[in-house]
Image 1: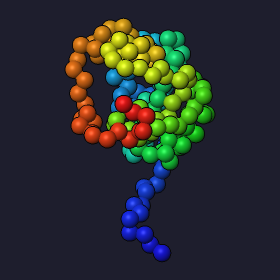
Image 2: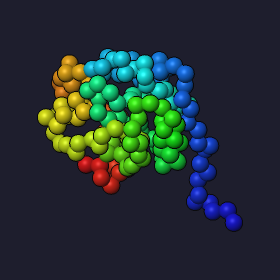
Image 3: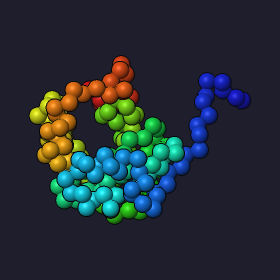
Amino acid sequence: MHNPSFVQHPPVTATAMSLPRDAYDFEYYGQRISDTWLLEKSVAVRTLRMPLLAVPVGGVRRGGYYPVPCLCFGRKVRDLLLEQPGFPDLRVRWSPFPDACYVVEWGERPPTLWGDRDATTLGRFYGYSEAAIAAFLRQPYQTPSSAISEPCSPTAP
């Protein structure tokens, strides 16, 4: 029996691309990450036609994450990264960010933090340069997802 309230899910695909430079956010990381040698060890992962960078742990970078719209994409991305070096302790969990419902995480567990001082700690955890962290702290935090009234994750602030 057909349930009209059930929305048909698109086919789930996750593909590692041959060149990390194909990722839409390659330059973003190139301008911000402390250990730039990690960029060439990264994997461009395409979900919903848009390749984004999954940066492995190494150097001062202790963990990473890749946002996904649903659990099924999270599992595909996790399975894809299982085959890549630099992505230890892969897990899919609720997102702490308001613009994604789930994230695929790897490496150490990120610290639970609040406030500007904690943004510095989190930036260091993800391996951003001191200059990139300082620039982030100087900007007012405003994203298109800031208007979301209800977070996807029950653990999101």
